[in-house]
Image (spheres, each protein chain N blue to C red):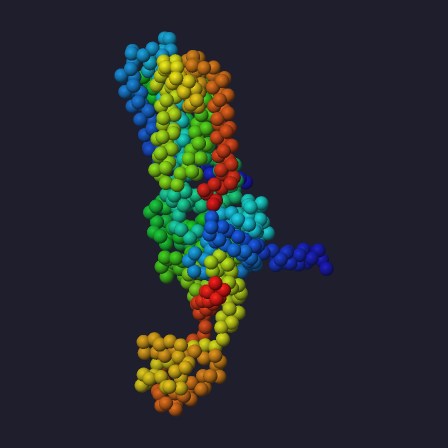
Length: 251
Length: 323
């Protein structure tokens, strides 16, 4: 029998045991964003016709929470295991590099979706958020979190210290999510910034995810899906190559 | 000959043929550093084997290559006949490794740690064996305690338990008794000896040469990434001729006739080196002539430590001669 289900179980148990920090704390911070931005900007911005700003903001914030937590899960688990040395227990086992990849990515997806679902359910108590297509919402949440989970593996393998991982998170992941249209539609930006936004893969994840709620998006959800899926495949290929070569983990 | 007897003879033959560990021409380079150079090593099934050498000799590097934690720059390694790269799944199932560092996952209890480790090997209904290991390693009181709360000695026991969850035929222990108190050290060795009696091959590294001498059948000595000695402990010790005599005399003066034999002086004692036991008679005669009274006398056999010091020293002088 394969060791994959156990590694997945261990990765899920790891974040669930500290669920207050890994699930509830990010839910709270996302809801604080919602409270502050909706208080300041509600009524001042018209994004989509007939959609209040707060309702527009909710799917963006939910997806932001999904993506950031998926990344945080795989990256922090790997770097903790690397620095404390207990990654050796996985490396000594007959688990293949594909099984290791799959377990870390799936655990990242589960945490991302758990935080995102939590935020969404809480907001439902206060706002009337339409859900036009569950399939689009689910597909973008799934692929987006898997992409960030894989990216988290790369960051976890690459970083040798916690501050290097924090740098990756603060200088790459955070700007890309904040500048992806979570808080605004890119049509409101000057042409230069609009063009730049199109180079940001996070924009397509947020835009496609939001399409599932409102059936309105900045670009076609099919185009977004194609770009996000291509990014996922490219990042997965790179991650698998790093794991297969044992880059920084099997010397 | 009945078929069953033929089969039993075949199994016996093949088990004797299979090497527990086979290292062939292994090199490992870290940039400009040649950490292992053309290491060849064969360890048979059922052996109790020690890898000895000073710090930085390459012991842990060799173990890491055997365990698949590092990749050799060239050469090959097999565990129970399985190549550690090409057949890594089978090779890793055959091997249990106790790492040198006290590593643990702070999220889990002892029992969870062992169940998870067992699951990595695809063994999911392994509670009976896990209970048995917990019992043998005296971990029962701490089975449901978080790993963080355990003392260093207890963490070391859990590391041993983790290496055994999948019942590997070959067990590698990298400095298992470093920083461990005497009581635990003895308990640990009792358990490891029991495993060896049950047919497990044991490979260990240790800085305590008396431990290696008491436990192992064969040793390899590594120096600067090369094997400089590989033999049974008996043969290695026999390679040093003669023995030492430790004397306490009254008056505390060594007769002039024996000065040439003195190898060292300890507080109140003279250590004399003799090449053959027959020289003992000459020593006694010289003492009688000098009217020296023997207060204490011990005949010291060479031990592994002496062999180790001699071999490491010899290779050093050879190196300086060839430099």
